[in-house]
Length: 246
Ligand code: NAP
Image (cartoon, rainbow, N blue to C red; front, side, top):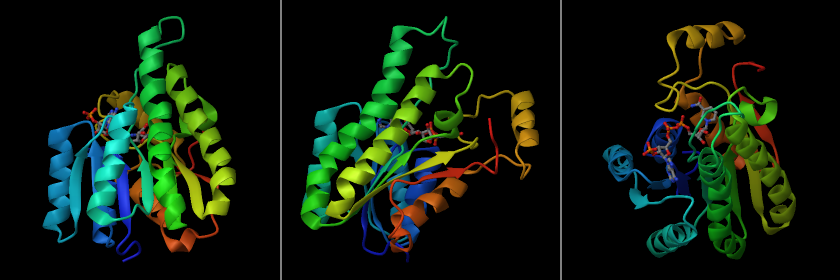
């Protein structure tokens, strides 16, 4: 029960890492707001948590929509009276080499993967400040640390998220709010399910622990950062990648 009675909003928790994290936080005693653009998937996650005996509700959220972000925060406060933890997990990829990348591909990824967390953080910060405590965790990527061919938009957004994390750790620390990031390596989820088998084998070979990541590898890292055990951890970027350096 490492997050007992804590209220957590997890964006993009209809699928993959977000869903696994939402279920784990539910099992660890949190009240979970499953915030996702995908209503069917989000409702399913919320139901899975409730079936385990924990409290959860689905909130429709496109993180690129500032008004919707505010609505989700308002609904959460009406229902639970506080927000302890925000996990900015929603993200997309739209890959292309720089010569072929369209403006639309660039804008979409920057808007969802970088502006989305900004929208959600701005929406929760007042409530967390009043409460005098809070944990914000941004899901970045090793691609934001090392870059990756064909992902200039995504790596720029994920690197931007690290800059945002470090700046807000400084701005908000004095208000009792910690801000950290995780940088997952290759994690097998619906986002990466279309990667060809040959590439998956290559990634596995390059990873010192000789396996690909699983959503629960990231969920446990997020749980640690959100828990009181990480009370003195602020502005950190925790790589969870099996030792893989791109
Ligand atoms: P995923 O399986 O595709 O799940 C992402 C979820 O976010 C989906 O439910 C998706 O809905 C939702 N979503 C998409 N756009 C949204 C928006 N605008 N607002 C709210 N929700 C939205 O992805 P994942 O692999 O679990 O990735 C989760 C996070 O980890 C992302 O930030 C990703 O960049 C990061 N990450 C992943 C890996 C990896 O290897 N998988 C590695 C490093 C970092 P739809 O399904 O309807 O699109």
